[in-house]
Image (cartoon, protein in one colour):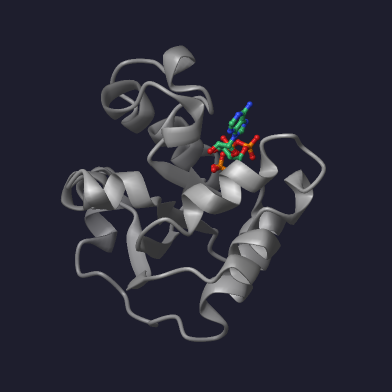
Length: 150
Ligand SMILES: Nc1ncnc2c1ncn2[C@@H]1O[C@H](COP(=O)(O)OP(=O)(O)OP(=O)(O)O)[C@@H](O)[C@H]1O
């Protein structure tokens, strides 16, 4: 069975507000494996590609401006159910509807400043990982793996 991966990105507000460590901690402590990580400025074309599915939405220009407004932290996290569970860890798109205990439920108020992105399907995760990282994932096995998986 191929191991599932998700593309997780701390948006510019999350970086500016000093939430990088807190967000990484939540995925790491849950038991997921970090396979790639970089801090980067985002070109407009890259942001437009990432959110291409939303290009017809009225908020699309503001969304692209938001994503390119400062550096982001791009990551690939791996493990059983990481796409769906990652979305649960992150919380609902609109932070006011996010449960306390989720990242958005703990750290955000507005949908246009919702701190973090997480892939919504396994298929989109693969596309997003290719867009942001190409082939450059780190292949390693955490020593804790037998203590996390039966
Ligand atoms: N009504 C809106 N007004 C402003 N921005 C919005 C709105 N809806 C969505 N967005 C922005 O677009 C992003 C992508 O929207 P989408 O519907 O794909 O939500 P999501 O999958 O929860 O978010 P993400 O893809 O960032 O993880 C949202 O995270 C948010 O930043």
